[in-house]
Amino acid sequence: MYDIDQVRAQFPILSREINGKPLVYLDNGASAQKPQVVIDAITRGYAEEYSNVHRGLHTLSTIATEKYEGVREVVRRFLNAPSQDEIVFNTGTTEGINMIAYGWAMPRMEAGDEIVLSIMEHHANIVPWHFLRERQGVVIKWVETDANGDLDPQAVIDAIGPKTKLVAVTHMSNVLGTVVDVKAICDGARAKGVPVLVDGSQAAVHQPVDVQEIGCDFYAITGHKLYGPSGSGAIFVKRERMAEMRPFMGGGDMIDQVTRDEITYNVPPMKFEAGTPSIVSTIGMGVAIDWMMDLGMEAIAAHERSLRDHAVARLGGLNWLNLQGRSAGKGAIFSFTIEGGAHAHDISTVLDKKGIAVRAGTHCAMPLMQHLGVGATCRASFGLYNTPAEVDRLVEALELCHDLFG
Ligand code: PLP
Image (cartoon, rainbow, N blue to C red):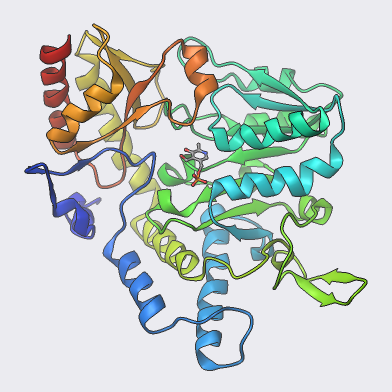
């Protein structure tokens, strides 16, 4: 039984007021709030257990190293990866995808080679590929969503040609909540011998993920959306792909030997983690993921499905609200505008006055916004602590916006 009051009680920030109103936090797609266990882990990490990792033989370094390295097994379990050695820590998905772009794709791609992307990727899964386009003539092939904002996996598979070296696709859209059938894409791509990178930044927050079942080569997650600290993240890299990958950054910790004329590398995954890492943030991410797994990813998903259904019913009843790309099976992420031309920033300002936090803008997904033909939208993105009553507060505030601007 999912005890929402007990869940909410663990997030200190949820009891604060914003502009004299109880906070309704609906900006989880951008970043999630932190439960007390994570806040305590960060405090303890600095107050009692801080030292650099992998470097010292003293007690504090040993504690910090054990805790930091222990997170690999947590992430492995979370993603059901075959081995902890296939988990590379980073500061978030942006770094994870850049690592693949520079370390794996760049050395293997030449002018005319193709990478297949969906139109609804976040800029983190677009801009690194534009770098390859600018620098070495790689061609980006876009696969569009249909009128409902859904992505046909077969269309992605059909876009794979003899020059395609990688498919990079989100598991869940941060704008529309579309859940992509990444398993079907991976099956089709594998049959054509093309690796697949899945951006799991949103999906892993809302549903169980099994990278072995999906069959992907790379799967990126970001700690701050998983109720953990910012500056933490991880990427699953299949063993075979890791063997093909070059380090993207050089520095301490990722080497075995350095002489004047030569270097040899540490074993993976350390080979891909140069310099002092985000020690305490990574430890905090491990605590957050453990906490989510204790709550149960199926239970979280079920709670959010019922929130989504309530939101679909309530928001769907506002005939002046333009909901972008809704169809069955989407997650609890809603992007909308109000008829009459009110700017998303104005709507968000009114909502803020009512204590409701949403995001307004283009959501780091400009190609999708161009495809949808909208300038900016408001986005309400729900998380594991939101309630149906908060959906109702959003609807009430939107009605006020409609009265003001409609
Ligand atoms: N991919 C998706 C789908 C996202 O929603 C985000 C963040 O909003 C990112 C990638 C980038 O994550 P980060 O900024 O944590 O690196």
